[in-house]
Length: 90
Image (cartoon, rainbow, N blue to C red; front, side, top):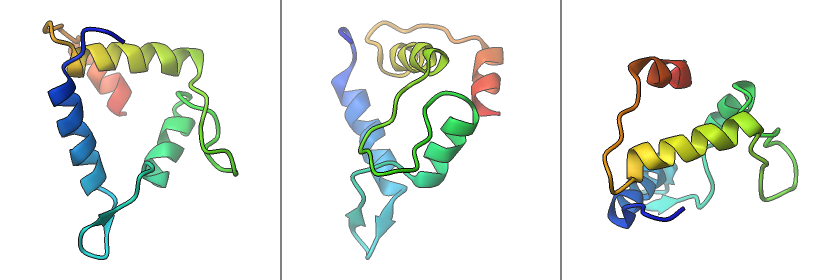
């Protein structure tokens, strides 16, 4: 995706890394399993359980991921309806 603010992305990645801290200062390079399972339960990704190192985004998940990327990291500020935020978080 073009036109994304890399500094905002870097800050978000650093924040997510803090969620997987262990042994004091070590962080896993993958995402939290509970979060991945919740995204799967919501229909955004394929089942994360298995030996594959990747998951497939569903059609809905891909559209939501792209919309969120633009909203969270876009260089141009975009408005996100409050109802969309609530629906995603529930």
